Image (cartoon, rainbow, N blue to C red):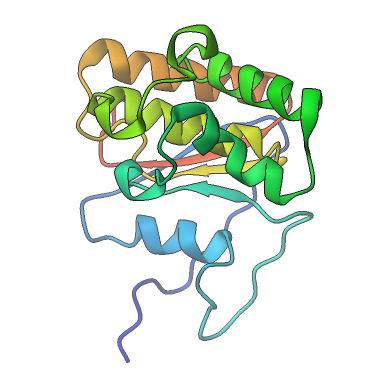
Amino acid sequence: AEEAVRDVSFSLRQGSLTALTGVSGSGKSTILELAAGLLAPSSGSIRADSRPALAQQNSEAALFERFAADDVAFGPRNRGISGRQLVNTVKHAMDTAGIPFSRFADRQTFCLSGGEQRRLAVAGIIALDAPVLLFDEPTAGLDGPSRFAVMQTMKSLADSGHTDLFSSHRRDE
């Protein structure tokens, strides 16, 4: 089997926002999947204090509940959060991701625009409250204002103590 990446080594500092850049096919997604534990390395090791949460590139594939708030609640609910705490977690995550709970909670996920779906997928990752958050091409296919909003969300998360790593082929990001 051919290796997708070779001799990669890096460390992330808590509260940092780090870009992993490169051309399409250079292994950015593979590195994120390795870091998230979705793939096992053929050699070497991956060390992390906690399991990172990964927002994958195809946000539509990550959405599977009928309503937006239910989709964001899926992960925290599986981790045992319920009742008022679950509602607060979902509300905070959606508001932080720029897809306000008050306007989008009852919207059907598949009726959302591409940018709204991307922000909803980000909200689902935020709701997991993992210390390390990985985002695979979070701004791909978005217009300028939507790209800016996603970048601001990731910066806000880093400022609040999360360690964020995102992939992008856009050097300006």
